[in-house]
Image (tube, rainbow, N blue to C red; front, top):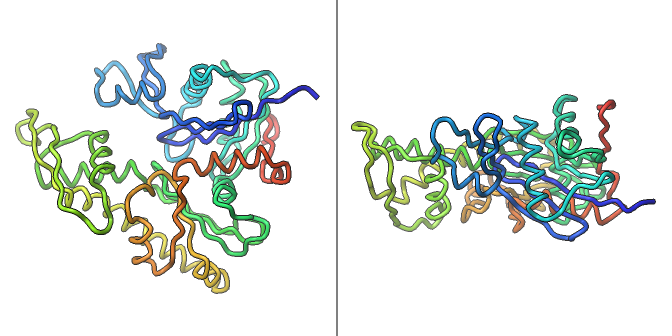
Length: 337
């Protein structure tokens, strides 16, 4: 049998995580593209540097929205450029494993298939692994033997609650709140309290630098924005309490949805989850003390993963390397969706 190069790909709204079996390494690149009409200007981290800085005739956006492919052609370009910049390529017999959301329609599955079988990338076999399964494997859980494990992934645009029991996902819920919504909430709080309009990119920096959900310290940072009244540029000093207020608006909503979700779980499974704790992962879990904050709100213990946004692609890596886990990878063909 000819050699088959294998790749694990996690397409996120904020970043693309890619594992190459040939190089045995994982890579991360911002999932963003800058274009003018049909001309591609920048891709990945270079495009993100242009975000909120371009004239009106240049678009800078992510091809993903709320965990789903929003623009198939642009997503293919991002992945192709990423592989080209890494000095690698998809051969005619490559096998691509995607970490995908739950309960996708046939059209949404077809989009993942055509990302690596379109114009630039062709003749690749596609397998799909449900994201909660990939997260569970990455965190050392055995989906076959674990009874009543709950995994929460707080990503860029969505938060997903999943219960794995009896070798399958028995219940799952997606909440459209993530790191991007936290940044927007910070913008709203600053606009209300300082009459200052800032960009989402600035809010994301404030979230990383000053965001703390417990043991808050009195900090301040200078930012530049547009005065809401005069419309002129203005510099102001932003307090960490305002930044954390914006973050907590979203975290409290996630925690409230989580409590409602936990109330729907059968008692015997809820007991097992309370015994071993809820597994927490995703890029937005980098916020300090987020596990303790959610524990105080819900009453459950949390196990915070140190993989953060890389948990799904790490799970794909383990599946690719271990043939015994191949049953979790579902083959997808163009005509049989």
